[in-house]
Image (cartoon, rainbow, N blue to C red; front, side):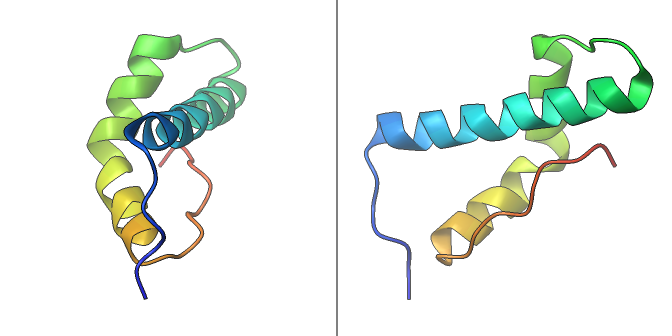
Length: 67
């Protein structure tokens, strides 16, 4: 069953939360702040597609992680 539809702003907020989590985890892993732009690019390239698939399937997304 698909997840209930959300407003575009709610979708944006959910993605931003995942990007910020990814930024924090990657920064902790590297021992320094990687910055928002790098976190955004890395998350979008490596995690966004799977996260969106999970969202569309109504599953809770796995936490973003450096990988």
